[in-house]
Image 1 (cartoon, helix red, strand yellow):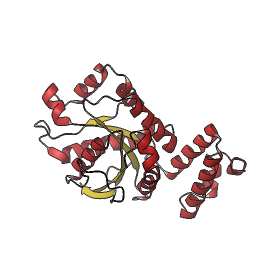
Image 2 (tube, rainbow, N blue to C red):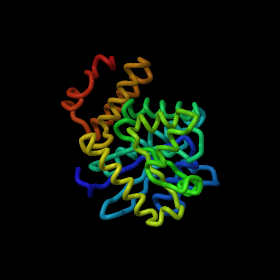
Image 3 (cartoon, one colour):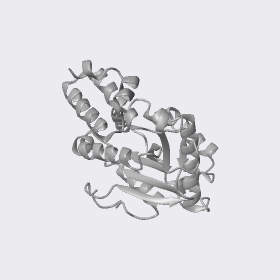
Image 4 (tube, helix red, strand yellow):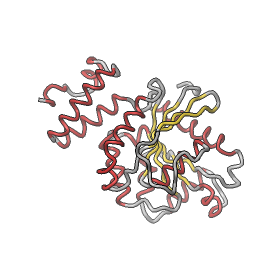
Length: 264
């Protein structure tokens, strides 16, 4: 993959604050209010340019708890669609925001399972990078922001959930913050993130997450659950994909089980 292509990120996380902090830091603008309730009708897609590359950020709504997912599910699906439609010829990836010194709870892991049910079991392995927010606090505590220090801290945590996430993401984790050791500022951190993303993209054939991955994830969920509701959802999603022209009938036949028996 060429290292000058545009990139699209979907910001995800168990805590709304972590996701908003990451979005504001990347955009260098307080577009997401930390202290006020989330405006679910507000714009969730932003673009900025760095080194002749356009980076698109799509922020997901709160999905950290079962109540959040029930309340915001439709908006989450709408934002996932915006993510896939944004800059359609650019690679798409997920950024999973985790707060430094915030325990990754069992409820957080349930949120990750929910994400897998939407985007497919391989979303972490093939398309996700973990971003550890609170880099300034990390620097004050450890006086070292190297990758070795970050992974050493993760491996020292008594709760294995964060280690499990990092392992499943292939060790792809980056610290974001504003401490003195981040003297090159945002641009350097974004460039590091882009390099990490480029390596991931190369390892997965340069395509990133696609509509085909999305459709496969839905079919996987359908086959596992066998629910009538999922069948209807799949039929509607398949029809919309074909209408958008993002997949041809031949592509579907080549990459997923025949749809007709599933939908009958």
